[in-house]
Image (cartoon, rainbow, N blue to C red; front, side, top):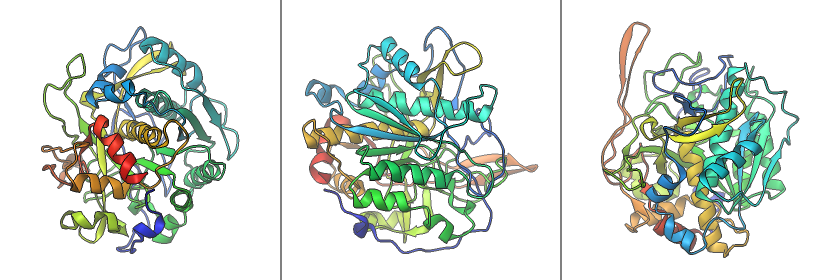
Length: 444
């Protein structure tokens, strides 16, 4: 099994501003549907919708293309589908139509239904859905993306959707409910992997203590050998400021991706043919969140990449598709108008994709019975250091950000992908046919 919290004991370094960035969002500051209520800690979805269609997914990659791109075929032929495992997905508010939308998605693409889809609200009932509320639409889209695409990767896994009744309003409202909900899922042993697509920039927190006080779920997950996956963010080497309109003009990274007990998933861009084969190699998505933590010191599993991370925890650890140039299709019927297909992108996609991969590795290690690999980060870095076939290097692209703000143009220097570990794609992306058995052996 993977190591526990003791394996990744970290030093707390640096300092945090009393007020600062919020969470990940598009570098263009457009394309999202989120309320602008001010809060010291902002929790919001990072999925970015594009042009919509009602008749079918005329744009956006489809399940067969993603399955081919990540080499899922050999695993499926061997019966490795995530059977016996449960993916826990955590979202504010959730979606009122998730069950019927997933059923429609599955029927359209001829996917099997999950063994079960369970929706729980352990921190209180979610307020009635309002299709005119852009924040609720945003979270419903996020939820739909998370559920439908985790299921694409691991169709044999059950899904528990954990919904919380708050997004963020005043103070730290939002994260405490999320942490409590995750602790509920952990204490009741509801799943083997937790997928998170929300984030808050480290500088957002009033103090280091206020951030560290919210780590309870991750400490519990490490103790109980449950894998936790998180999106690294969608503003490249920086992130939003407190007002949700401006970006930091210096480098910034987001928690919980920076937590050493979490697997941080960054973004790549795919260039696929209709059958899912590649026209060209994957490149780093320019908006993939990545950099060095101000809060957490370098965990032991990153000692081999200390030349890149220095004394800090570096993110991400690994990367999968997130680019808006290689978005995926989701189906939702929660809109005020007709049900529709949306192309969606962001590291909010990369995280559930990778959570599905972890469920496949759990299945491989457990032979179809519930089995959790726990903290997988040490295994990921070992696979990369051994140059195993499961890790595929990303050799081009960077997450440098350029933007206009307050009448001035800013450039936040990012990090370049170069074929080894980097602060935009981590160790690289994966070939699931090899990565899944490698991960199962090393972490299981």
